[in-house]
Structures are given as structure tokens and as C-alpha cells.
Length: 404
Image (cartoon, rainbow, N blue to C red):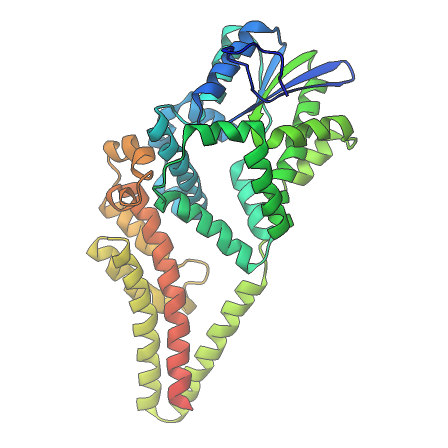
């Protein structure tokens, strides 16, 4: 920790660690991601000390979003739907919403300390090292590393970041850098779910350390400023002192996305087989019984999907698309009704320039998800997916109940 800066100095009380590994000195500056003090501390240390490179807790997509705030204007909504990336984009927007909410309170843009580090490096002609793992990989590894209840915690936490309107004091944010509040929170989190903590924090500590070593080996830097969130400072300091694995294999290992679990697909397929068998059995009891079972399947699955679209305030034709395509699941494997409905929504209500311009601000408020055409299309996809699943199970219960 930095304890030598005089009172009133921008670096006074800031969490700073200095680690020497071989011929390279790493100066770790812990920051809060929405904090004027952190941004000022970055500028101060760059002005006061000489460095050969600046490393930041960013991956390439987040770096580009800071460099090019207009990047969302180039978002291809149809491509997002086709590639099944709706959940990932929505998760990124939820995280952005949380930071935006804090920014509204304190009048500072999210990531201002990272932008200060990048701008400071550019002014001095220093290379910028991007050392963090892509957020999509981190979320996927976190999601697949835990059980069902912890997965609900991840989704619920993202949802809470959008719905919560509770103010956070600037003093509380600054306490995070001293490590007391943040450290106690993480230690409790680790006791509740060590695999989740490791995927979100521990793995990234190891990943960023490996990236620092990899970048150092590829250049001639002897003194590196590392601007990271305060929650990673102790872990990276420890890893720099003790990590012995070759950096490139370690980076590759920690970048692998676990294959999706097969049991949900097998469960869904099994449920469908049971329902299909029940409908077939109903026809053996007569055309009337079989027709009633088939009608129940159509109404429950189509109705559930349509209600999901309605909940997302979708266009009437998007609602119809959801209702028509949901019961046809056996004839369109791999293409969910939500993709059809969201595609119709994106086609009928093409995002306007204003939707791209206001996207980050709109998603900071839960009502904005229904006002912005981009966010509403994402909601349409997710709600129709949920409605279809619920409808399938209700259809199965209803059909089997009538046969017993």
C-alpha cells in the first residue's frame, strides 16, 4: 500500500504495490471503476514516475469501446440473434447499466481511470498492454463452473444491477480501494461459492499475471504501470511473486470456454419425447383425444411464447411469429421460436440512430429496456425463450394428466 504520499496528494491513501520479478518492476495501482479519485491517481502517478509501458484491466472489446464510444452504432442485431449471442450482449448491457447508474450519481464516466491510463500512455508514446480476459469468456466459465442455484445467482445479480436504484456513496466506493469492504465481501462470497469466486476473480488474477509476463517477455519494458481494479491487487501481487507456469499455455488454458453441459439438452429432448409419446398414445384412444392433445400442445407452447413476446412489448406480428413457430419445435431443430420472433421484431422496428446513441443510458433504467428498440429486441428473445419452455412443461402436464 502507498503510505508515503503527503495529505492532499492525488496518490495519498491509494492502494499501490510494487513487485519486482527478474529485471522488471511492476507498479500495481488499485482503482475503483467509477471514481474521480482513481482517475486523478492514474494521472498523478504517470506524471510523477517514468514507465516503459502501461497495462490496463481491459480486453480488446472493452478497450475498443473506450477508444470508440460509437461502436454500438455498428451492432448488427440480426447477426447477434443468428449467432445466439443475445444473452452475452444483454449481460454486457446489464453490467454497463450498473456502472452507468454509479456514473449518474457522481458525474464521471465508467472506466474513466482506464481512459486516463490509455490517454496518459498515448501522450508519452508508451505501449498499452491489454491484460484482462474477455468478459464473455469469464461469464461463460463462471456460469459453467457452478451448479443450478449459483447460476441463478449470476442471472439474478445481473438483473439486480438493472433494477436496483439504491444509491452508493462515494465514500463507500473509495473504501473499496483500501481493501477492507471489498476483501470482506469477497471472502464471504468465496465461502458461499468458491468455484464462482475463482472464475470471476481468482482465474482473472492468474490470467492477467500471465499476460503481464507474456507481454514483458515480448518487449524491452523494465518498468510497467499496471492499472487494475482494487479487488485484483492482492491476487496479482501474489501471482507475480509465485507464478511459475509458462505464460502462453496458462493464458490458453484460462481462455478455454467449457463445453456446454449436455444434460439440459438431454432433459429437454427427453421431455419432448415423453410429450410426443403421450400425444401419439392419445390418438390410439381416438381421433378426438389425439386432436385435443395436439391442440393443448399448440396452445400452451404457442401461448407461452406469445405471452413472452407481449411481456417484451413486441410488435403484434412478432407476437404472432412467436405463437406460430413455438409449437413447430420438432420441425425446426436448433432454431428457437425466440429467434424468429426477435428477427421479426428487429425487421419491423429497425433500430434508429437515436436507439444506438441512447442505448447505454437507456439500459441504466429498467424502463429503458422497453423504450429502446435494441434492448427491447433482446428482451423479446429472452422472454419468448422463457415462455416457450414454460409452455412446453405446462403442455406436458396437461396432456399426461388427461390421459391418466
